[in-house]
Image (tube, rainbow, N blue to C red):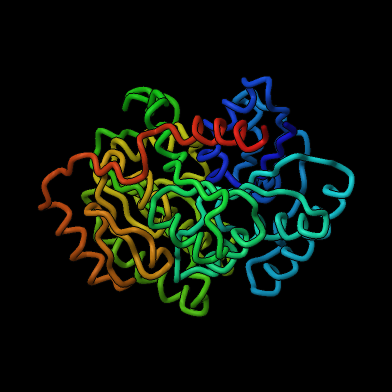
Length: 367
């Protein structure tokens, strides 16, 4: 079975990893990886090298990073990505193409498959994020896909509602949990040797992306976040950079300026999956508006101060503290987290065998 896997960023590659390993090792599958988006951007850490270091060949590399972060830049990038992928799909034939998540560049790559009647398998469908235009892209990818591998029964029900059919909709759990079950995370000493960051210090892992539905408010939002961070002198602030979304460059610039003038803040462009999950394990808590605060953080589990509406609509587990993007409210939430007792494993996203289930399902449906 000839399989193509679409990966556009450090985030989706880290999630794909256990599935890629199984597909590569199984002679039933002929795997080709298609890398695009920020993987090819030096400014975003050139994470294509991470794929290659893990021993995977990258059959196709397509440059699709937008020139800026305005709505017109993003719209142009979508069109450009569709055009480039129309050429790829015309020249290469696959039995199945994997797409993960909800990014606009993933939507564009999948959109280009539809005239060619290429079968697409969508991972992480059925989720909802009302504060991001990704919500539209995710549900659109679902409608363009033939197979659906979701992470909870709630999301399975939503995919069925969107597509109007129960056929080929499978709750396999989250691939991220496969990583956490099987990956040997770094010790705090190994982490220090690799990244020169001492996680024996009380640390907050921070990732703040733009709210792309209310993008005109993002300058206000990042100012509020920074005001709150300025009060966190007792913590080491480990800040990862935002996606290439509308106004993402503005947020990136403001964070870089804050970090440059802060003794306790550290900038990280890309940890890679091993580094990021290891940092999550040892940090005091997480702060921001990333989806990893909902899925991966539930495994440890780690308390998460989730900011604003970007992830609104996702399954909320007891480790999530939702607050508006106002510095006073963020400061209150930080004080609250400091008083809370540790949680037990929440185990809502499966048992860590999503990749094995996906491989077995594909073998069954193609008989």
